[in-house]
Image (tube, rainbow, N blue to C red):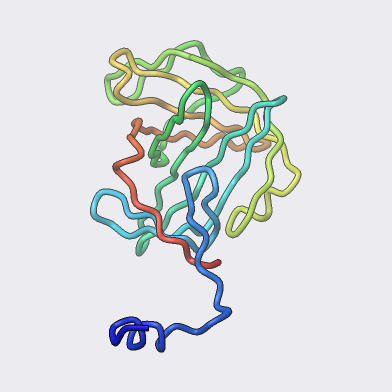
Length: 171
């Protein structure tokens, strides 16, 4: 064993597990997501299931700023970052929505069973009615989620995997 290997290996505890490498499909509460020069902590996770289709919503927090990271594996990995907005919407969900002068058209809708972790743990075993809308330029989208009588509206834009970095918060 060389001098450098002795120095550097003596600081390592044997038997200490290495942190598991995370992906956007395996993020856990407590992990850190670096996006747009900010370090966000994953404080909530929602797993959505509609039939055989599954996708994830991660609540990311820095200070008092909350965003949502959406991750799904369709034909390819699709990622989006969303922020809640105030927009009066009622059911049944409309075919198109106008927000801040931009028109969004309904792409898909349905019902999903959900499981929650972290700040979203109270959603365990619940159901949500959802609708996804695309802007005409497809640069951004609207997402509607009806949780009982409350409808949450979020505006988002697609991002590429290289735009984020993940740091595992635990093993």
